[in-house]
Length: 429
Image (cartoon, rainbow, N blue to C red; front, side, top):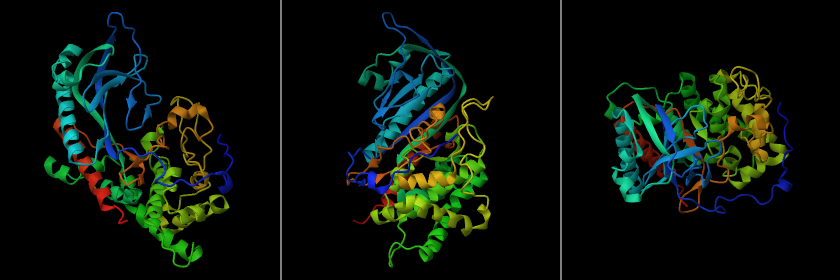
């Protein structure tokens, strides 16, 4: 069961975090593409033991916890990895480096996915492929091999792509991204679908799309009511950061009521990789201070006003559990259920120092792996050259086909879209 941690009061939180105080990393867009229906076998090169490889990923500036991978192939802009030999199901995965948001980054992303497509096609058409076959690729010759176990890959019909993108997006652009993702699916030709940002629609259910489309409206109505009940000062106008954070948190609360999957990451079409407390620290200081007063209860009142702003979310009881159905490691039993965390406790935690929907802040270590990677990049916001912090989001459940050219076009379109959203919301100062 969940036991609320001690609330960190303003007096013991230390210095406030300014977006300019963290070591910047390059603003970028990175991709991960799992390729299902492939089976990998490992043999041991003479004199080399079979060992799992920890893949160091620049986008996280750290190790990818709980996902130990063997490195099968390394190109200039991407790596092909597979689950370690001790995993039950071995899934090959392409992991790209983070591409900078400029023309060179777009060119490299386009080229990398063209090469990934070539490699996928080779594996699809050849019954068996050995690492020596990979040596024919120009990238392999240009940058040399990486010492790793040899591998033999059996290609099965129709590779099943599961792409996702990790993007640094301005907090003020979140509801714009929701708007792109919430449009109804279209059935026009591929080229037109891509120009209309097909890839960002993904495969959300109808209620998810409605939730994303209405999130900003609900937040605006609540803030409009809030201004007449509580005011920071006489001339206060809610910031765009506050409006977008409120909308994002509301969608997070609604998603588990829509989906009843066991795996928590599958709840959220746009998953937060930077935790919500870090996003909260990107609000203007006067708003941070005001909502943190009284143990964050002011922030909870905002969500209570959301509940009464529109009649269609009357079931949103803040005192009920965040995951009403629970989540668990073992689908066949009730072992390690994550339950007891109420929506009110999560909301208050964000305003007072902890995002409780993360493995490091949730006290039950039995479900650590279930929450791992949700909000895991607490200390690694993506920053642009001017030092403005942006949360990192993961676009999940993207549309995909078994066509590698569509996969390349999808990556390029996501890249262009994120650039457009960040430029659109670039602050004037």
